[in-house]
Picture 1 (tube, helix red, strand yellow):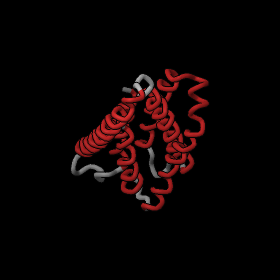
Picture 2 (picture 1 turned 90 degrees about the vertical axis):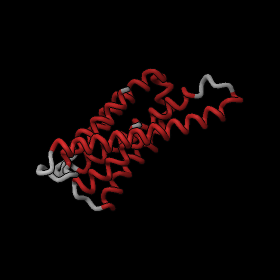
Picture 3 (picture 1 turned 45 degrees about the horizontal axis):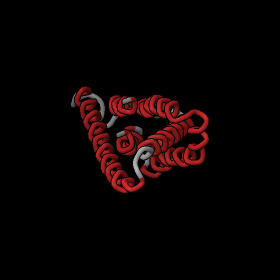
Length: 172
């Protein structure tokens, strides 16, 4: 669910909450993809070294915590911290998806892999849509709590609740 919500919330935070240009926000957001790609090279090593159970627990807990952090990004947050956290989040998400993806098909007979793959794709898309829905709802709730005469609708403080909610979903 967090896969859909993070790319939805992050550009809103960076562009509207922090006032960045789309180019700057896009370039910084690419660090998440870089972290994800770097995990592809080390996934087998980590799975062999620590095992599936440890990897799933660690990437769920650490990944959930790292997903929450962008809610606290402000104008004063150093660029290196933002890039580092986004790269770490991408790294953890990729390792988690590799672990769960491998286990999802471990007990499926060869003749049913195609059907299982199709079902998995549909469920993943539904989960991403649900994550975006929850993130949007939490952003709306946060805006309502601050009130119409409070801060700007997309002020950085309004992103704490949505990022915390999607980070919490990662723990489940």
